[in-house]
Image 1 (cartoon, rainbow, N blue to C red):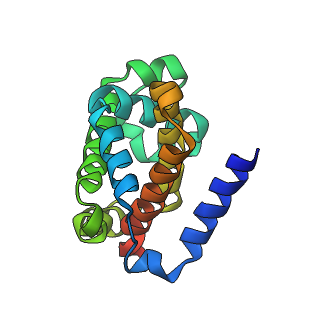
Image 2 (image 1 turned 90 degrees about the horizontal axis):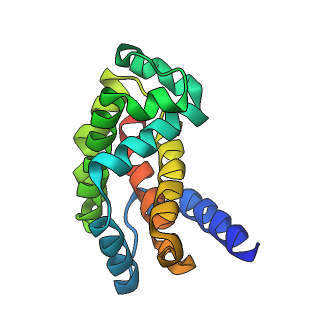
Length: 169
């Protein structure tokens, strides 16, 4: 229970911190944990799984994907080649950001502008995707998804969401 409370507190503190909008200090351990996690990520499978979960758990997000065909249930979502392909694309961008921890905002600037000004995606959906992707990671990594690994990943996603949201300010 303490771990859940601590990580909720950590996310809230990072989200409210003025450092989030400028820079974040990464410890060597956090960088190593993030790098190790993303070495184990399968962009196609894990990205598709995360996007399918997002679309199922938050069905109103399906409105952005009306051209993707049948999104009516988890079986349809998991088997949908367009969901899988877009999940791979999303996770590819996240993977790229994970390899540029010291310049996440610059790395995501163009993507943020596209999502804000062309696609008009609600930026809250970035946080939602991060939440479902943490579940995908925890399921995939099992006991290797320790509290310290989770802390590093949660911190990474707070910074990532901030970077993706910069075009909305």
